[in-house]
Image (cartoon, rainbow, N blue to C red; front, side, top):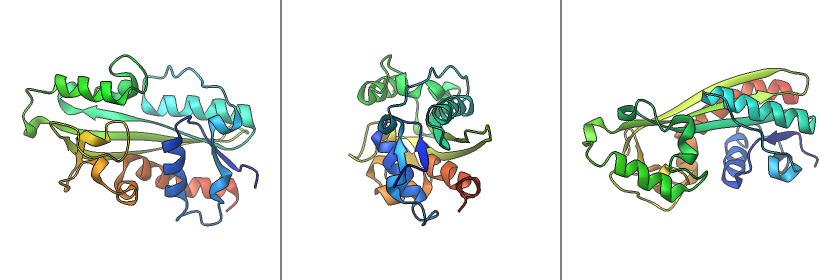
Length: 204
């Protein structure tokens, strides 16, 4: 089946997450019709927005223009209360090199080493944008509130998952099953909020 929806990411984890999130709510959408930017050879645009929503729209606009298909993009990161919302949009490159999860985790934990648990509040934030080739744009935002652990825990997930313990949980996001994580995640919340608009756009 040819692609009907393209996701603006080169991260295979995110493509898999989006397929898993959309499958129950868009039963008519063949998982193979949700493809990533790498699958279609799309270039990566410069993300020079100053908010999650701006960066998500930049990526979705670029991909919709490149493919002529409805494009979905997300921009997400970790916002730490005691750091005034940082790392924020710089989450993936907090330690200086994009996508170095281990270095990003180590730097953030070092910065918070003397911060006691009552002040370690943080949240994952995700802005999910849908852009169609004819110029329609829509953005939804989701959050996952939690507390930062003192050290990484769990082997699942990616990014900062090993150190965020969701409110009401004793496990980190990296210790949750993929289904448990998708049910409460910032990305899951944002993409599920986007679904009614997706359904209209895809003619579901």
